[in-house]
Length: 447
Image (cartoon, rainbow, N blue to C red; front, top):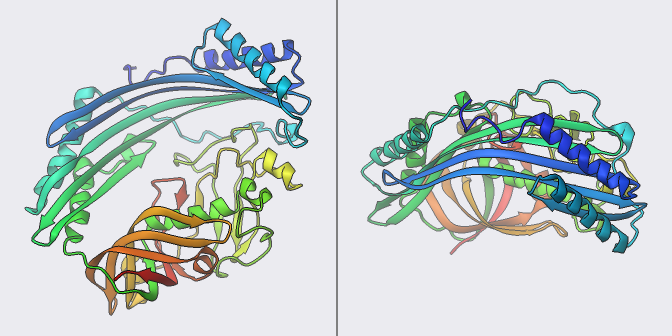
């Protein structure tokens, strides 16, 4: 293996480090403990205007230990994996625990929920990528974008990234698990200009298997196409209208929903979906489900960050909220059981419909196509939603002109309930997998 492929430490070594820390915690008198170790290696290259701007090799390792003395908790971490440093980290966690208040919900996840065995999830695809080849790929990506149209006048750069990492988790229930995964990406961002001004846009491709990446030329062309089509952007007058969120923007809208059903927000009563279990929060055709064991997917994991087995499940069926997103602590606070989501959701998928984006635009008739969102004007307590946006105005089922410097607003409860259709143009470049969303109505603030 080349240096890019081979991790600094093998799985057996990392597992023995976790076991050593758990043993040290037991000797120190901890009633229970858990430890998580990581071991990562990567390469990042950024090229701008044909010249290498940054070249970074990443080599990271670390371990965190959490100890419990009854229901008092202490945590410490270290990037030094020498035996003495590991002992000192355990001792530091124990000292912290002795001074913390008892918390009736603190502790490891239920031992009965630990993952026992799991399928090969096809997560590890090392890329035998030399620095020279990484530079070539980035240059090809940017060159294609710059040559796409004479109106492309500048570049913010193109990047090639590859990362391989190992995660190991163990606890005093006797659980010890590890998996290795990869993540590779190509990206490009360029600037277009005409007599009315300048616009920038970007595109990217990400996958666990480098063979699944779009070609550098395809990424560059799409980045340039997106930048050029935004030229001549106009502002809109304030209005209410239907809207389509393209998949990359739809992902953020569903992400706000996930934030509202996370255990932390729920037990703090800081969510507009408190006590919404069993209620209709989407239209009745919407199904949202987790698929943690999809082979090769970016969000696939065999167990969560507490060792709890992941499993497929429906979060929303027939528009009705079926479950929350819980780790063991928030589950205890709510009097419930963890859903295996310590660390987040896993390949959360909105079941696609039959229409592609062009079909949705025709269905929209007249309204807004949102292709960019800016800012974070979200109040999860009330559901109030307001974000800067850009995109295109659609008339008679066809794109009429680009729009910019507007704000889209509404209330998340109404926006989610007002979804009219889910496109089949599912974007899988993230942990939330969704097609475009056609929304019944948003408020547009403009001139």
